[in-house]
Length: 618
Image (tube, rainbow, N blue to C red; front, side):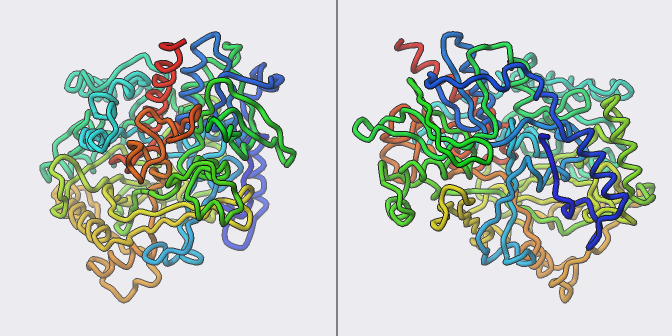
């Protein structure tokens, strides 16, 4: 069984788990909890003692690296992943929120925050990361957002040659298969969208890659939001063309009414077809084996399943760490690479002093504005309703379950507080929200909705955090995460300014004519403030903080002379040969948008670095 969920999370109403709820859980488990991928014939292949390359982690970047390196037929590639196969339930676009917390996701919590998540238990912010073949691309919102020219040109200017926009764009395009036509009854609409993107931005996109990027079917509510912002003189653009400012239709990683994870895009098409690629799941790497005399990575130590028996396996060329922004720095530190004081306190021998975990960056969002509209879903949200719609999706990949929790509108704005003239400082997405009678503990089970939540996200935070080992149990415990969200007062000011800017849509004739109006929402702890005051927005952002889950920077890229960096521009760990980090943790700051696209691009770029280095010489 690849997937299971705790009965008291999301499904059950408060303090109870009814017979209907238990039956629904049984349905989900029996029909969606297993994985088609379990049928691949090389799933349980015998592991050799040595490989050319060992890839630790099969997330968004790791799947790309596994695919690209195994293109070289005489290279032996081993992928070690802590999670299990990707289950069928992950393919279901409309049920994203049921995926966490569950067996295919890590639930990380920050240490108590001083300025954020005040309403959460112990003031700790939740961060979800994927734990399955495909990593976080299995549990995310499927948004494909690259960032903009200014982001990558800035990264390049900080001592990272080859990372400017003109350098990374080919790697974005290499993966991409822009494919809008998905739903036959709205073919005309989505063909128009595809032609708009390809004709106006012909150099920004490509077709034929492994990763399918598509749009959503037409919905009247999304169109109303879109037209209302056009009334405010926001122009339509393609946010993946390099210049994000303006109004766009969503681009998501989905195919034929289903999610397409990095596993679905890069591993399934080749799995079982390339005998030089071996994937071992339910395997946790506990240490990188480093030859201390030569300062070279030569293999890894790992455990399988629930066992804590240590096994060793060796790499003749390189060890590639692709565990993500939280697990990659943890593994480096467990292997003796990190801050000296940190390692000594954990009883770990220091092999190389580097600022691992020291520059954690993430976006932060606030959702204080909810809009109600006529003709939304008004019936009760029951287990029977959802089960019937899931059953229909299982046989057709159509219907409401092929949708998303997002409306088909994406807005990037630059507030008056922005100092940079080349990019936005706020991203706005519009979430479907259900208000009414429900069987569920958490009622946000799309696609049933009668309200819109405006989610305003800060793209350029000045606040940054860090990640440290849990000294009492460094191997088996989650690392200690210090998010430091909203620590810099400027961040809160930008969020409030973003909310104020977006709220102007409430006064448009489009919204008023359609009968859209704002409704107050419960905000315990903020009742004393008028719900449209700066004081309310400040209180709401600090109490009900929503991290972006776009964390980067814990294995920061930079020149060897840069005391803040861990890897060089070719993603090689400073001072340790045969070791690279290839995932979003190497990005010096979070690009302006969701991190799936940048992580996949990093996988493409890192794979090319490896091929260049080994094929050119050997």
